[in-house]
Length: 298
Image (cartoon, rainbow, N blue to C red; front, side):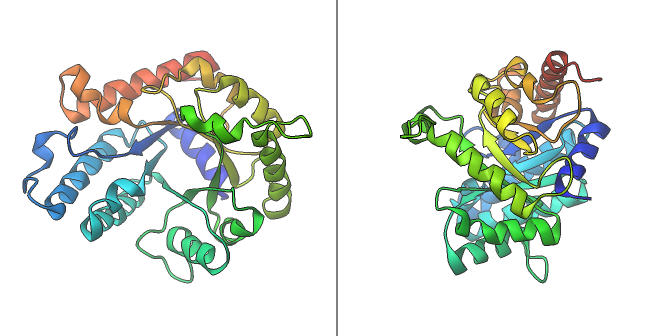
């Protein structure tokens, strides 16, 4: 199965489009995750691992995929990176699709090395995931090593197109001499890359990141990129709602993932519950919110 086909199958099975973002913060994680305390990077990293494992086990029936943001683990050096690798292994054990949130962007042999590290080479490495987020702003040659792995290894890539942060408009909304916005120009390039590197099937393995905080652009870009899987951040804590993402589905399961990080992982803090109870309650609310606006069966 292609990457997009696996996504759709998992979404139909779980009746859910939810992507769990694993962005641990030491000051917001339950104290009982830190069995070894917080005395050094190794102890904090082990706390991150317990935090992630507990969430993944609790939400395995409710979320389609996980998205660990590598920066939170890199910040704690080698112990943190080992935990990052352990999380990817745990995802495989739980049959969860993994998206490495690495946002890499470089050219030549460096891009090839990034692609091998995170989408695999001749053998599986410790950081290999099912898909990655990458920065397309260095152009097509910086993306080819990732696109090749989509073809060869049934992987997925998500290109940053219109992100959810407030400053995204500094560049992405720039007006070009053609009258188009810069993000619209990039969308057309992505459509061309899909035709070259992922032409088969209803959906390509080359997807895009577009924030839920820009619902008009979601609708616009879906029309330009009808075969692209969308990864949609900005739900929950950043203000996005089920109504904002409803246009992606058209009453049909399509391979579009709605990411939630803080609104799931730290729900226990607002609800006064255990980590697991808060996350499950928030995930069920999120699922109902999205499904009621998309008219998808539950």
